[in-house]
Amino acid sequence: MVSVMCLTTTGGMPLFNRSHGNIDTFSFSSMASLNGVHMYGKSHNMLLKSTATEDMTIVWQEFENSITLITAGVTLDVQTLSELSQAVFNTLVMFVGIEELRNVKNVERLRKDLRMSFATIEKLLQAVDLTDTTGPNSSLLNYTAVMLPPDPELLQSYVDTWSECVASMFCCVIIEGSLAAASSGWWQLDRVDRYLLSLVIPSSDASTSSDVPVFLPVKSPTVPFRLVSCTPMQGIRIVALCGPVPDLYQFEQLAIQAWKSAIDLLNDCAALYPRNIALSFAFHESVLGFLLIDDMLGKMAISGTVSGHRKPVKCPSHILRSFYYQCVHDMVVEKDENDKQTEIYWCAEHYKTFAVRDQDTILCLLFSSVVPTHAMRVICKETLVQISQDKSISW
Image (cartoon, rainbow, N blue to C red):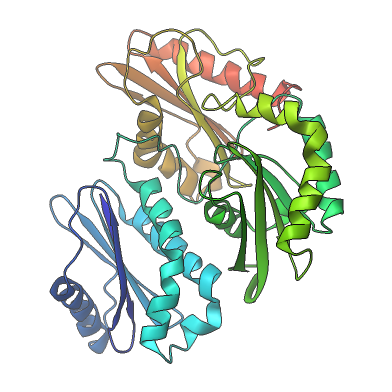
């Protein structure tokens, strides 16, 4: 359960209020009170950053001396809520540009323009909400979801050809919401830009084609690009970050030409969902699910369906996400390079989880509760080595 409120810093005028999960949207009076206590502290040369009640944490953050975001969440710490606030502000930049946020001249107009960002903000809130176990939520804040398909080199060759066809350095293929392959230019974008672009790209069910103007919060916060995509088949999105050309019709025609011979390959990739890793990769029989993170590139792969046998636990992906936010996240944000944790584990009644870190790569595995703790450590380390050495997948 998480909520975010956005107000102008100078006048305290509300711009929007969004929430996710079983939490009531804050009333106008509540927003005014939360903003008022923050402004009162500022008037006395005190900066109120956060507070906590028995069941909720609240964080205040200002951006560009113009926008104030107040985030509140259940079972979430200050660090996670601060990262959420930054991600929400970057989303606002992506849709309206930094200048519109630095110089708020017309509150009503800005309020209307920001509505375009609500769908993406909803995905950000969903990414940190640990109380929702009903949907297929498998996202982590600030990490681009990827899959590890078979024949990665062949798929990459199609992406590179596609990049030449549309004259764009920034191209990718999204399959069932996860990035399957991308051009080298796409990976050279800042991880903040890449992550938010992956959220802005509509699902294949939403429309067959889209052409959305976007600012890049890091690379280009003042000049917009065009995020253009089309759906050649169910569950698959062909994407490019373009300038004025090609137009949408030309884009669709180029996509047909570039990808018509890759239909079988794309179908094979789509069939991996929700396993999200090539069938040729064999996990130890005791593994129920995995979460693989590259903290340097800001990407992650997750699955709760890596084995064919009946699951002794419900919502394995939710368990892995909870394990990340409540334990593994501390490994990621540690500042002391000489004293970083490299291993951590959880033991619950029906399951166990183990995480191991090797430089910027973190692997979390989910096991049944009957697996001995010492065995989890060995399996996790061996699996990480296997992933790094397996040529049939590309991590």
